[in-house]
Length: 178
Ligand code: IMP
Ligand code: MG
Image (cartoon, rainbow, N blue to C red; front, side):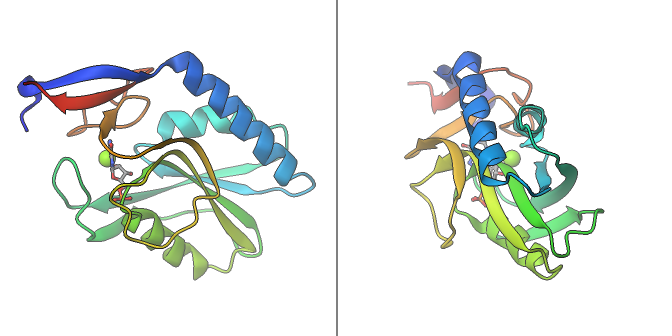
């Protein structure tokens, strides 16, 4: 659908996002107390969520990034996922927290989890800002999430439509103009 015929409505305000990020960071700080987890941000979508959450945790952490490309349409992933940037820190024997913007079908995160498992981490948990349920295919456990939505396509706070809108501080729902 061309951008000109899409309309956006505010779904989650930046204040609500920031309160939730603090809540998740407090939970992670408590669950991982006494350990030094590796937080891995999934580029590009998780960039702001990742930057905000790692600055709110009160335990010692290491950070790294991974990038996955999925060659699909503008609104869904194709299932053909390729890692275009791998982690550079060693995760062997370490607790890993994967930080993702949104889990939709679950294909992207499943692919990333499989590739990380081969590196022998102590554990892998998933922390997603948005858990979107309607199109879920993969059987995955989203250990931590900020918000759950049933359906729809959302943008802002890192989430894009055709690489646009990522920089918006709030999250909007995109819908066809009638
Ligand atoms: P999955 O592999 O279907 O779980 O898709 C995950 C990826 O699809 C995310 O990292 C996003 O890049 C993209 N995606 C899925 N739903 C949305 C949405 O509502 N807005 C923006 N991007 C989305
Ligand atoms: Mg995307």
